[in-house]
Length: 313
Image 1 (cartoon, rainbow, N blue to C red):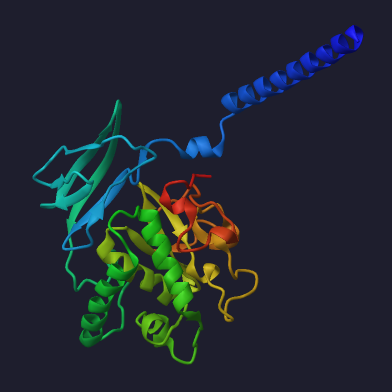
Image 2: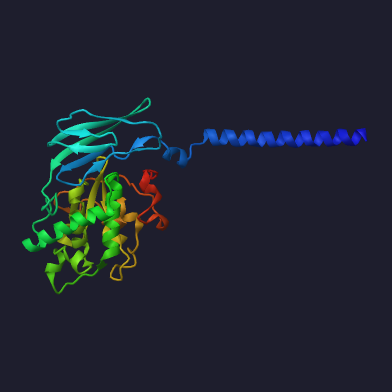
């Protein structure tokens, strides 16, 4: 009996030792190996660079991944102040830096304040010669846009989320249909809202139109020969391409490009999407990075990466 007990005790001790070794190994592995979850939990601001419009949509900065109290301040209160909840109050055109202090951390966002006329269709018209719309249509759809913003957007959304929701709404709402019998349909972008039909050109203009009051900087870009058009959007001081036609799943979109979720915030190097660099007509920005975790499962309005867990690729 003594030998049996001794043997059993030895087996238990041996098994416990193995279990402890495994636990220790797993602990070290978890500690030493950085994961995406750990990277995503970094305390940071919703935006590091922002354009806020006097007369435009109200904007609010948010500090992600902390429960600590945040102290806000503005380097130039005469340009813009910031409330205790991070809401920015623009005063006059200019530039200021909004600072958020969280414990020992100091987070900063460079803010540019510009004026905005609510009757403005598109803020950046450097590559556009006309819109082909009447004053009646302008009045009608600028009022409609104000209601759309109140329905779909919140002031605490970061720029990439605002752009995402506007882009998705357009491709969900309208179908790609190129009507070559009427060339005016190529530039009458209200057709996207009125008839729920559009082309690459009207999709691009429609996105710029929706984003105009938000402060999200969006540019219309097209190839030589006007064979294709898409957007370039600024997020945190860096520019990215957005191609709504390739995000769309309408019947009129070629299968090679349909439902291409990689076509949101992508670089110029993705030549299969843009057709390559140095083919632009008019002004454009160099886009060198991608800022979207691709995958069909996250292409929803409530995508988890939109709350601050998305990462740069």
